[in-house]
Image (cartoon, rainbow, N blue to C red; front, side, top):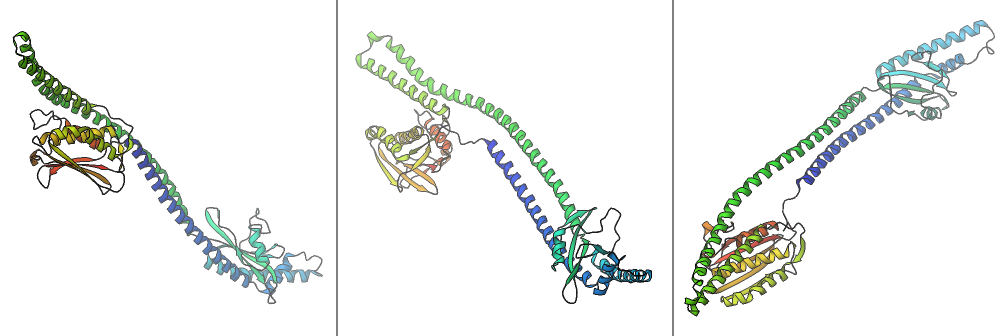
Length: 461
C-alpha cells in the first residue's frame, strides 16, 4: 500500500524558507521604519530651514541690501571721485558687518553651517562664512529651490551627505516693503538626528548578514542532523527487523508444525492403503485436504501482511468496496447461521484515498473474524457514519466479546485466542488502516459481543 511517513526534507526546506521569509519581513519592517523616520525628519528639517531662511531674509534691511548690491556691482563708471568710492565701500562694509552679526546669532541658535545672500542674478552679495578659493561666487547648489525663492516662494533642497554630515539648504525670498522680490537667502544646516539613523542602518546591515549566515548554518546543521537521525533510524529498523524475524520464525514454525504432524500421520496410515476401509481412506484424505487448506490460508495471510507498500494511492468509493466484500461472504455467513445488516448513516457517497483492494481485505477479515466468534450463529451489524472529518465503519457482532486485557494484544501479529487461528488477520487489518491514516479499535457492543470500529480520514493520509 502506501506509507503515512512523508519525506522530511521538503519540511526542512519549507521551515528554512519560513525562517528566511520571517527574517526578510522583520528586516523589511525595520528598513521601512528607518525610511519613514528619515523622511519625517527630512521634512521637519526642511520646514525648519525654510523658516530660518525666512528669518535670515528679514534680518536684511532694504537699505542694507541696496548697499551690498551696489558694492558688488561695477562702480567704476558710477563713481565720480575716490571719496565717493571710499564712502560706498565703508557703507557696504558697515551693512555687511551688521547683517553678519545678526546672522551669527541666528546661526548659533539654529545650528547653521552658512548663510548666503544673492541678488536676482544669483550673484553672491554676502556670506556668513567666506568661501574657500575653490568655491564659486554664485550659488549653484540646488538651482530649482533657488529659482522658487527668487520668484517669492520659500523652498528647501533634498537631504545630502557632505564631509561626514547630513546637510540641507533652505531658501527664502528677500522682499522690499512694496512686495518686490530683490534677492534670496540660502541657509545651510545639519541635523544630528540623522547620525543615529546612519549608525542603526549600518548595524542593521551587519545584523542581516549575521542572521542570513545563521539561517544557512542552521539549515546545514538541520540537514546533517536529519541525515544522522536517518542513519540511526535505519540501524534501529534493522535491529527491529532482526527481532521480528525471530518472532515471525517462531510463529511460522508453530503454525506449520501442527499441520505437518497431521499430514505425516495421515500419510503413514495411507501407506497401508489396501488394509484401510473406504470410510477411513475418505477421512484421512479429508484430513490432508483440511490441513493443506489451513497452511495455504496461513501463508496467504502472511504474504499479505509482509508485502511491500504501493506508493500510488487512488480515490475510490467506499460503498461498492464494502458491499462487494459482504457479497463474497454472503453464502459463508448464511451457512454459519449469521444474519447481516448494513446501515448507512451518511449523506451521499463517501470517497476515500488509498487502496480499494486493501480495504476489501480489511472488510473480509473483520467479517470472517465475526463469523469465527459466532460458531452457533448470530447477528452482524455494520454501521457506516461520518463524524468530524472521518468515516467510521463499525462491525458489531453478538459473540462473546473481547476481554479488556486482550484488546491491545489482538492486533499483534501471531497473537490469537482460537485453536485454529493464525493471529495474522487482525494484524493485517491494523496495518492497512494505519497506512490509510486511520485507526481500528475494539470495544463492547450494547447487547453483548464486540464492536470493531475503523476510522479513516476523508481527506486521505
